[in-house]
Amino acid sequence: MKIRPAELRDRRRIHEILVATARFTEDEVRSAMDLVDSAQEHPEKGEYIVHVLEDPDSGPKKLVQGYVCYGPTPHTDGVFDLYWIAVDPKQQGQGIGQLLLRFVENEVRRQRGRMLLIETSSKESYTPTLRFYERSGYDEISRIKDFYRIEDDKVVYCKKLTPS
Ligand SMILES: CC(C)(COP(=O)(O)OP(=O)(O)OC[C@H]1O[C@@H](n2cnc3c(N)ncnc32)[C@H](O)[C@@H]1OP(=O)(O)O)[C@@H](O)C(=O)NCCC(=O)NCCS
Image: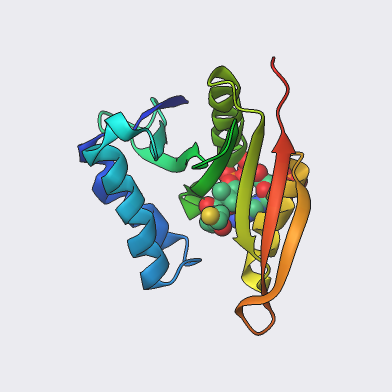
């Protein structure tokens, strides 16, 4: 498995993965793609950083199996946000999400980050996702009840990162 910075040619595949997860509304997919585009158009700002994971054994096209988008949280000293992470549903549950998350944690450490935050939703379809974060060592540090809609809370997960 190889993790590399996303390029323009990955745009379609990232969009395909986001839609295929069946987890996100059209609006959410648009927001996710806006960040992918911002990362491509303004890499110098360093606001959004996008990496893809490709399987070198998946034929000449080296199919991208998942992607992650993260960046430094504005106006903080050493805090980063994980904005999106998604893995092709055909490949989920095989450790690809873990690889992407560990990669981001190491990048954050490398950039002298001390904390990685993940905002997510409490709705039922996210139960496996919340479990994924918890098993990866993230703690729920805040929750706004009924934030997205009634019975859909905003949950913030956090992991404090120590230098490796
Ligand atoms: C959440 C997500 C990125 C995890 O990636 P993944 O490659 O499936 O995760 P891994 O294989 O590394 O880890 C699997 C663990 O995550 C959990 N998990 C989450 N979604 C899962 C799925 N669809 N299938 C199996 N396990 C899943 C399980 O608890 C599993 O733990 P286990 O090993 O104890 O069984 C991926 O499932 C995904 O793209 N989900 C839809 C999009 C999403 O919710 N993104 C996050 C919001 S921005």
